[in-house]
Image 1 (tube, rainbow, N blue to C red):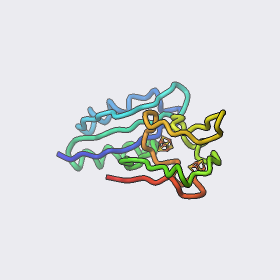
Image 2 (cartoon, protein in one colour):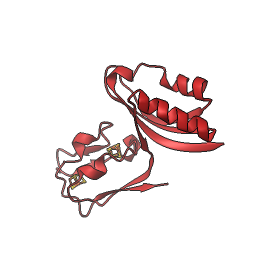
Image 3 (tube, protein in one colour):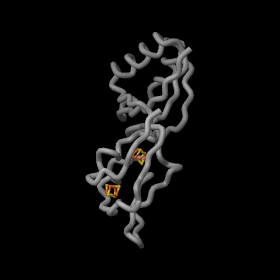
Image 4 (tube, rainbow, N blue to C red):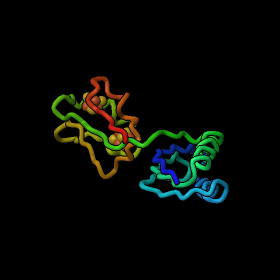
Length: 136
Ligand code: SF4
Ligand code: SF4
């Protein structure tokens, strides 16, 4: 048995589709949802651990890509260098779970680790390169 941890981004038209059920039924996979943010008619994100045979995992990933679900490897951790951050706000727009936000009193960037889906999208958005991602 193999395991793979991934981040899925669903376009709005797929949010209410039984995709997880298909992974179980068609590819004999055991999905463990680690975190999810799914809102009807909006883009959805899910952090998922897939367990199953290697072939089943590969076929399941191919199925996801074929139906236009974006699949990224799961970042293990996000590190933000608060000393170097200038609170420019450029990373906030790409963070749909709102883990990154601006404190309107101090005008400093705030990072709410509990909301973070570890998707890694903020890393390339920072012009100073002060956000880093660590992979398994
Ligand atoms: S990795 Fe970055 S963009 Fe993704 S949820 Fe966490 S803080 Fe937001
Ligand atoms: S883009 Fe980089 S420098 Fe700007 S607020 Fe985000 S982490 Fe800080």
